[in-house]
Image 1 (cartoon, helix red, strand yellow):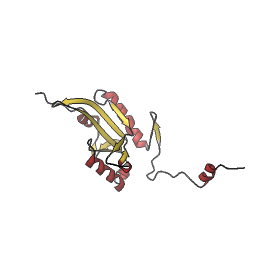
Image 2 (image 1 turned 30 degrees about the vertical axis):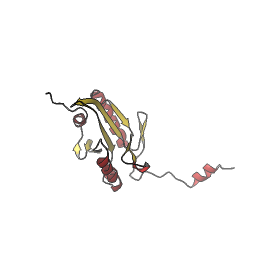
Image 3 (image 1 turned 90 degrees about the vertical axis):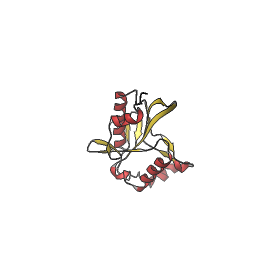
Image 4 (image 1 turned 90 degrees about the horizontal axis):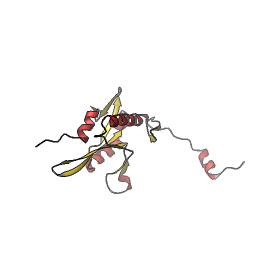
Length: 160
């Protein structure tokens, strides 16, 4: 029996498990790197149904440039878009970039470098690093709820 070159090459290769134990999950037509990301996606969809005027769009796996060159292009987990609003005659679109991480991954040096680069260079800073502990979502160690997202996306403008 003859083997093709690709079959021969694949003989010695085993699929390596994720170094943090995450398993890919499919939800809503998207493939997420972890179950935690997919759970947060479902939470975002629920919040979007609750406040469709403020959470107008959710981008999944948006690419973001934080400098020049291919190495400076990163893929985050989500970008939540709010409505454009006008204040002082300058139109501005509100958005929040979110990266969902486990507590272990969040503390890793390589991720901290990406977070620092985003927060230093990107105009939509800060990057919201979201974790989950005991069934509660946290953004940078503060409890994350719909109100915190709405405050960023739909600020109350002063009436003059």
